[in-house]
Amino acid sequence: QVQLVESGGGLVQPGGSLTLSCAASGAISSMNAMHWYRQGPGKERELVATATSGGMTNVADSVKGRFTISRVDTENRVYLQMNGLKPEDTAVYYCNGRNRYGDYWGQGTQVTVSS
Image 1 (tube, rainbow, N blue to C red):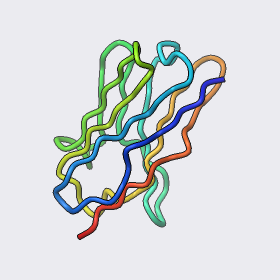
Image 2: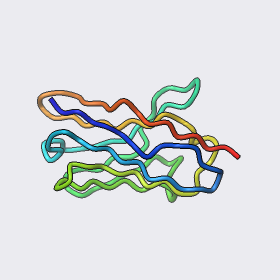
Image 3: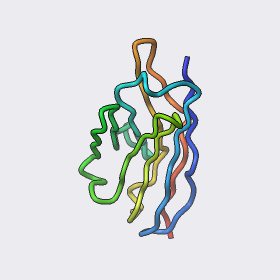
Image 4: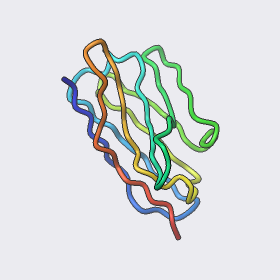
């Protein structure tokens, strides 16, 4: 069983930056892909970014050029660097990883972009 804990959310003005962190209680090296999802008010949960154990990353078109995902397996952490934040980025952001034993989610961290 792996626990994921997100941190780094908060209130930021449009155009600002935040870095989210996801700390895992176990080895994320067992998880081929780590993801960041988000769920905005009244919206469905959507995939924001993915980082594979092989070093590949991908981000959603809506955040391309503004968000960067990274994983540090030696630290069992995944990061989401968010720049140029917009009000539509307001959401609860969740970390997710899967291995052969289960599908793991954090409790989420709130990001609010507002002036």
